Each structure stands twice: as C-alpha cells, then as structure tokens.
Length: 251
Figure 1 (cartoon, rainbow, N blue to C red):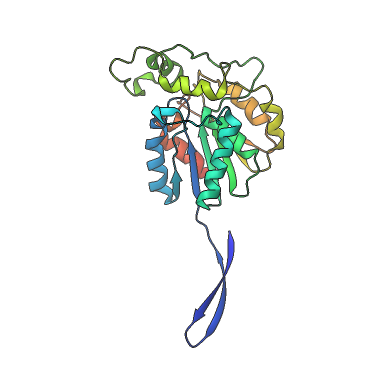
Figure 2 (cartoon, rainbow, N blue to C red; figure 1 turned 135 degrees about the vertical axis):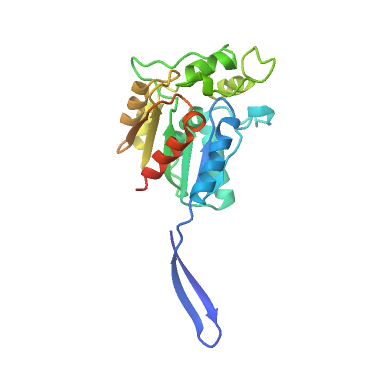
C-alpha cells in the first residue's frame, strides 16, 4: 500500500515522502472445533511472519454471546468486515479452516477494499455432486477426530467427561443449518474478484479432496493445493506444512 506523507523538517520545510507499507494483517477464522483449533497456528504465523494476526472467536462459540441478528454465515461475514473497518486495517489476508473457510469465501464476496486475499483451508459450504460432507451431527469429539486427522493419534485428547456432542458443533449448526451447506454458494463464488487459494488435506474425511477441487473450480483464477499426510485440520496436524504452503503463495 502506497501513502504520501508530508513532514515538517527543521531548516528544510515541508518534505513529501511516498511510502510503500508492506505491513500485512492475517484474519484467522476457526471451524466447528472452536478457536482452540487455530490458536497454536496463530502464534506460529505471527512469530514467523512478524505480521499482525487477528484470531476472533465466532459469537456463540466457547460460551460467548451471540447477537440475535447473526442468523447465518453471510451475516457473520459482514460482522468481520465491519471489524476490519473498525480496526482501520488493510492488506488483510483472510484464512479460514472448515466453517472458517466458508466464512472466508463469503468475506471474499463482500468485495471489501481492506481484504487483499482469501485462503480456504478444507472449507465447507458448497454442494459438490458425488462428494457429500460427513455428517458429524450427534457425534462425540472423539468420533469427529477420527474423520478429521490423517493420524488420529495426533488429535488433542478430548476433555474428561466429554461423551456427548461438542457444544461448538451446536453453535456451528446455528449458522449453517443442519446440512452445513448453501446450495447457492458455488454459483455465487463466480463473483469473487480477489486472489483465492484453496488448500486441502489429502486425508480429509469430513470433506474429501474431490470436494476441495470442486470448491476451487467454482472460484475464477483460484489455485488448489493438496497437503500430504494431513486431514481436515492442517493447522493442528501439520502446521509447518500449512505455513510453508502459505508462504509459497508469495514466492
């Protein structure tokens, strides 16, 4: 981003300087597993890139309050664009995993001048013929992890006594509806006008790589990259590989 600054220099008077500001902001959007699934990667990204990293908890997740007006994914996407306006930040890369990937796609469709790029990591939201999403409703955290990891032994240990459905899955359905898809999304993605990159775990059993290919195909000019030996949550299972894939986008 270029800006023009006029400085008052002693003995020289006003001096106008044109400055190229390379400061980048990342907005990280977590999925149905909650903000804990993105927290470690947020720290890694901030440390390695020296960038500003924003990591919100979606309203209604982790026991946080949720406004009555937040009835669907588009409404939440608009709230995050309003957040960027409030923070007066620009050159924002939005990175979303799973449900967060759907959010990143919806943010891209809002055409905010503050958002320069979107990265969808194992996103959900579209309908892809022959590639249905796994139905996780009613499943325990441990059962969902079996679908989510290339190596389930790398999955975080569920909290003691967590035998029922995750409360955050219930919060998720409050935004997505029971199907966790929007039949209009794939067609609407044709109107995205910023660079969009789709990254996918080769062992994802929540949304298989064919689903990811359909996601990328719906977005003009998008790229599609498969991440080896990882499942639905690359930022948890293979964070270094995910970071490398993100940095390669700028190479």
